[in-house]
Length: 333
Image (cartoon, rainbow, N blue to C red):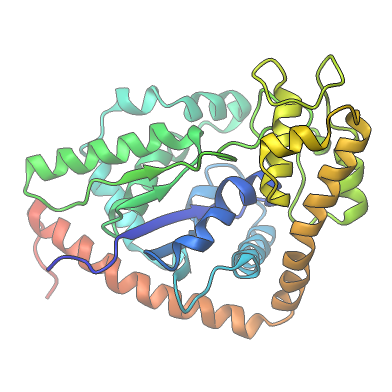
């Protein structure tokens, strides 16, 4: 029987602060999908422990991220919202996929190379196998569409390859997923290095804006944002810093990039940066207020997680049972 709605799956790691880049490049794009697709939104805490975490902080971050999901507009009535570690099938399917994934495929992963350089004192197998677990996340739910940033396209391609490899080896089992990359804001760059993605792991806190930064902090970081050589507010490949700020302004204000260029013609960078800060503050303040309310209601957040995990487990356990049967494992008695 054909699905009534196509399925969307996505997730964010609960590792520290969630940045403006995470919101504009991912989280915000999830909200309108809820009305058109069967959306499954996960807090991917299994992924987060590939880098050392402080246990109490990880638990707090996971709950805070759930509150940000809901405060941003994700509805537990419309979507399945849960924590990855509450659904054992993610790890169970990952092991089966490990056995059909080749070492060469994982060695070629750009993110593995980057993270290996940053965490040379903790080169663990989880860091290498991260893309296989991501494939498991996606394939468990017969996902049709994966909202991703440009830096995740390599991981999605591996998920597609593993789905096709399993289907060819055994029989059609997995949906081969497609990626969804928004035309504008797919990759928000660092405020201090516009050639690098805005990241919560940036050693320079002025490089990113947290979704929970107060208005004074946002304005200060925006004023310290690097600029390009001339004073013209123009979107161009040779002006990566201003192009990044124009993208942020457009996404937060609703003004097109072309109209923003006209709006700030001859205004100078100072005026432009303050306007970008105003737009970011106006976007984040209502989310921050709702987040604060939700964090004070732990019973509600726990109920959301309980119901989400129950729904996710029903779907995921059926897929693992199907995969295990095809592989040749004895059924549970």
